[in-house]
Each structure stands twice: as structure tokens, then as C-alpha cells.
Amino acid sequence: MPPPSSPPPPAAFGAPDPGAGGTIDLNTVTFEQLRGENLSVTQATRLLAHRERLGGFQSVDDLDQVAGFPQDVLEDLKRRSSV
Image 1: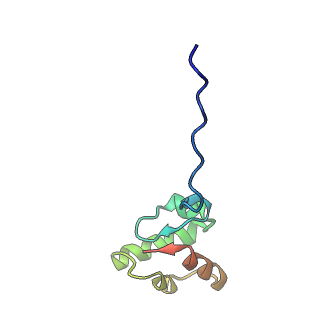
Image 2 (image 1 turned 135 degrees about the horizontal axis):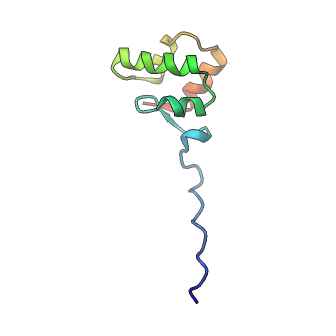
Image 3 (image 1 turned 45 degrees about the vertical axis):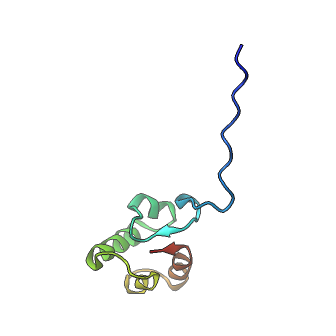
């Protein structure tokens, strides 16, 4: 009889997990990932449309140009984002 299989190792502490408040890469994040980060449908759509117009984000500060984000949401998003 084969030995019981062991469970997979836990994820490394501090490893990014886009659905759990990890680092969000603004240039590759998807609509579904943004929704998983608690952005509304409108906010996620505006962020992605702005990214398309810019041809990609150069800095997290480019988020300041996206309409429809309350200041506290914007600051939190900027802290969790990278380019």
C-alpha cells in the first residue's frame, strides 16, 4: 500500500496573491482580478480603459488621472500596486 500523500506546501509568507491584497501589476491586471480587489465594475472598467489610452501605466501615480475613485480607495490601490 502506498504511503499517504502529503498536502501541498503552504504558499510562501508574503508571496503576492492578486485576489488577497497582494501586489497588483497595473499593466497586466485583468478585469476579474480588479473585481477581486473590491473595485466596482465601473472602477475596473475605467482603470483598464485608461491603461489602454496611455499604452500602459508608467507610475502608480498615473492612477490619479482615472476618474471615479474616492481618495481613500485610490490611496489604498496605489499602495498595493506596481508597474
